[in-house]
Length: 388
Picture 1: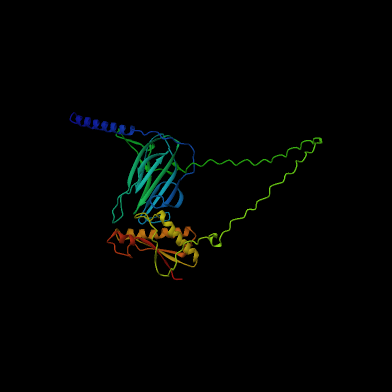
Picture 2: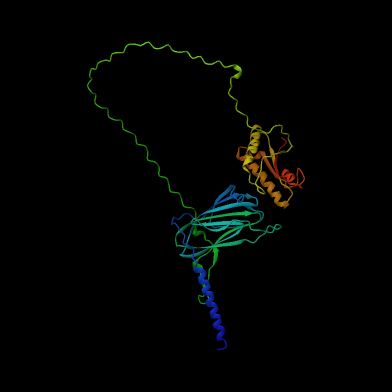
């Protein structure tokens, strides 16, 4: 028995040391967060946007949990494309007092606020295999001390850049803690935050209606006073008024008279031929994205005016890129840029049935791709009047 005594002494010492390290780790409690107690219906408010910077809102709904995993290609909530962003808002309720570990499993970037405090800030693209567009999601964690029954404002922002997308919200709750090795080691279960602890944002206080107007009572007439005779004033002697001066307006030559200018006709594209493409030179996008730059609107308004002037006209909007990079990504980018132009036209009163979109990637260059000037010419959006 004495032979095994040193072995058990060393094992016990190691277990005690491990327990002390874990105790120190769990004792580093973050500052408690302020919370509220206003309950709401179950589910978080979520908004989906086109583009990775919340460019164009596309879809709004209520979700019980943050639990998404999209395959490639992505068609998330009606979003056709590889790049999108989303925002969840609502409240999180703590089931017990204690230290919670919040976990976000994402591909690509995400941010998480609780009670107005930014706890997770990982807003960057996760690198992937450029051939398969596959990448393992990354999990980010933050520890907070919560109070039982309190509601904490929760906001999560997320973006996906190319390829599959993942975002899942987990937590490790004190109530799932289990002990091992006679209490020397504790372990918690990581699980998706249950829907009963997630609720919508607080309702805005109802505005009290204004009280109805009260009709004013007519004042009572005052009693008539007896008439008192008064002396009439003596009219002053008449004084001759000076003769009125006649003002003659200056004579203006007929040739110098300014006529009111007629309203200017809105700018339109002239001399259009069916089947002949017209390049929209001033329609520009952010580099490698399909986000319009502000200087593009004048050219697009000109196209809107043209389509309104000729209501029977139908057009094809085509997107083109240079041939540098992955051809599949160039193809997707050209399609999205054409759709962005078509969406602008439809939002300004042009029927969608009059607009067709197509993307050609780098297959139809206007010039070579040897120089930047040539590549700039190849990156374009154009429209073609279709035969009636």
